[in-house]
Length: 150
Image (cartoon, rainbow, N blue to C red):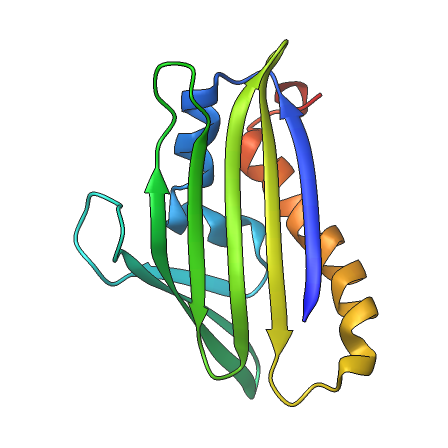
């Protein structure tokens, strides 16, 4: 599996950063050729499921995910969310942590990603490209304008 770690600081409050990062459908705006459908009713919590569908011409796949840990930030305590990837093409997990930082909030996105039928030889390039992809996605989710991310 490819381990991907992305850290970003934002001027956003912990609560606002959390809200943006856990608005699952909003992620599609930062993932090319991808749509996201939440398949369970709100509010988000353990058991919430959604599917990220990526289509590129004749090639496409679903990336179904389920929230298995849901602890929104509260009373100065960081927020934690863990997603389990339940697909046949992409497996693994993702953890999102949002904590207080001197100038707003700090986000740590940790993802353990495996692409089916891809030999372990490709773990390093997968991790490298994943850091670029998820780094851009996290920055985009935190920022409606570039000044929101520091």
